[in-house]
Each structure stands twice: as structure tokens, then as C-alpha cells.
Amino acid sequence: MDLSHIPVGENPPHEVNVVIEIPQGGAPVKYEVDKASGAMFVDRFLHTAMFYPANYGFIPHT
Image (cartoon, rainbow, N blue to C red; front, side, top):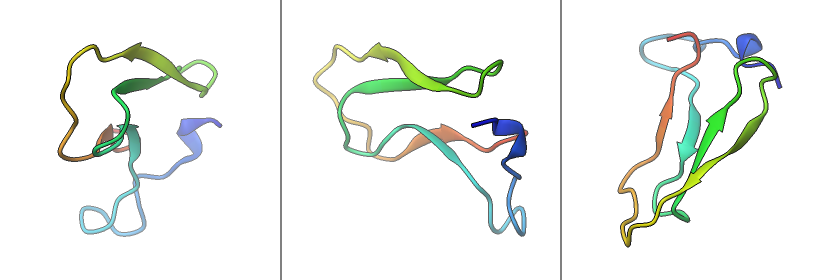
């Protein structure tokens, strides 16, 4: 998937698309997107006993 094809959103700033790298309450795994290929891969395993209280990610083209 080429992230350059994902628009910011239909009606920014009220409606935006996001790419989630660490899901809320999910497994302690951090994902990254390779900008060259668009592939998502595991960046690292988080070695703490914590969970994220919200989704962590980014808005395309920002």
C-alpha cells in the first residue's frame, strides 16, 4: 500500500484519515510504515508493562 494515495480526509480538520501504529490497549508492539515501499512492519516490541490509553499514529501527508 502506498501511503501517498491515502488522502488526509474528506473534510479536514473535521474528518481525517489516520494510520494507527500502536492500537489502544493492544499488544505492546510498535509498527512503522516504510516510506519507500509503503509496507507496514514491526518496528519494536515495547518491553514495559504498560498499555496505551489511546490509539497512536499519524495523519497522512502531515
